[in-house]
Length: 218
Ligand code: SF4
Ligand code: SF4
Image 1: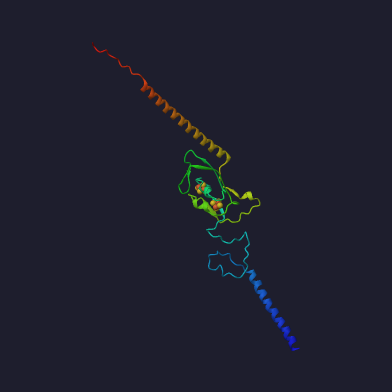
Image 2: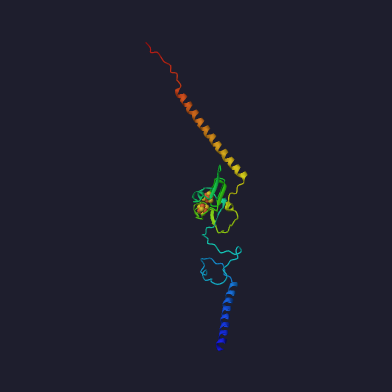
């Protein structure tokens, strides 16, 4: 009989203990961990509370040196093509149009002489090596901390940075064509003038100069 009541008491004790453990976790579950950056000392000390973030309202801080989505500040781009050349997967496509003269400066004072009719980066192909950002002379090509750019159509991962209208592209192309034609005509004209001058000089050399001959007096 004694052991019967002892067992009941033991059951109540263990049930109570179980409830205590459950309720302590239940209470902690309502507390929430603060999203802290991995370099902070408290990062690994936060071992209680919910770790789930209410994304996208809340986001974990991302490291400054992270490689996420490329961005080109096109106004500072001199369309030098270095980024496209170094890209190991050819995901940068540039269509340059040469200007006939300097048409502006970047924010670091570099002259702009080439327009970008097209500047596309296909992030679906990008392997995030970051090489393009290291060779950019004006530092206009950067990796941003934007990591969520989910799309339903993969072609939407091809981002366009050029900001010229079709009319502007046509105008700048025509201007450069005209400049090339004028240059070619000037070249032809100079060559023609040179040939004429040389011809004239040869003619003058070959011309028989009249030299009166005098008979020797006998
Ligand atoms: S990060 Fe690498 S793969 Fe991506 S665009 Fe730049 S060079 Fe190409
Ligand atoms: S390397 Fe920089 S400046 Fe040159 S084309 Fe690429 S983004 Fe533009």
